[in-house]
Length: 125
Image (cartoon, rainbow, N blue to C red):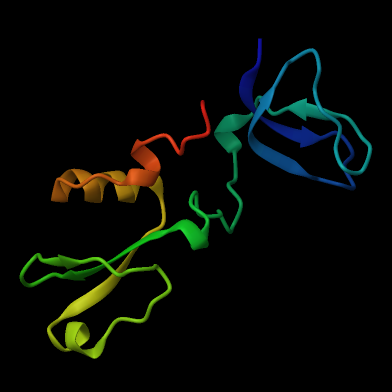
């Protein structure tokens, strides 16, 4: 049965590690260097990578313009559109929802629904 494990390369010169990999214990993958990978059982000593990529691709990040003073929100037509001067003059700030947790919290707080995360894209799945 497949399980999520941290795995590391057995070659001490390589040192490659993979976090939260889906593996079948009797069929561990091989490293890019060609050496076998092994399950890290010392998870209490886990050191996360310095740069953890966002769970949402920057092209698909949700962006809102939020006014902290009034609590009002404006929705830009696309996430790469610069904020118009009229919004920044009224105290709005760009807020990037770059993780699903932030997006879910925002949707719950504002009682809105994100179509991309809530509804099927029509792919038949």
